[in-house]
Image (cartoon, rainbow, N blue to C red; front, side):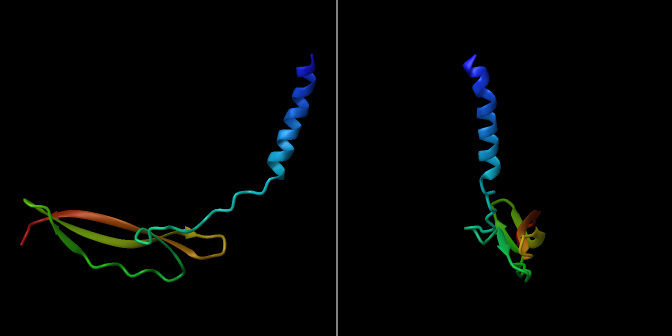
Length: 89
């Protein structure tokens, strides 16, 4: 019987503690600046490169695309990479 009386009190305590805690602020940083950047200026796209993989070659194209904004209005830039098989010269 004591558990039945204590359970509602425990649930109310958990609810108050959960709602009273500060929300976790998102962190908009990356240790790897090769894949994510923050700022209103679009990063420059690197030039296309060709990688020789022995019997064939791969052309690598990288572009920066906008993926939304931070709460303070800065643009989130993420790098997209595409690869295509090309003949080796």
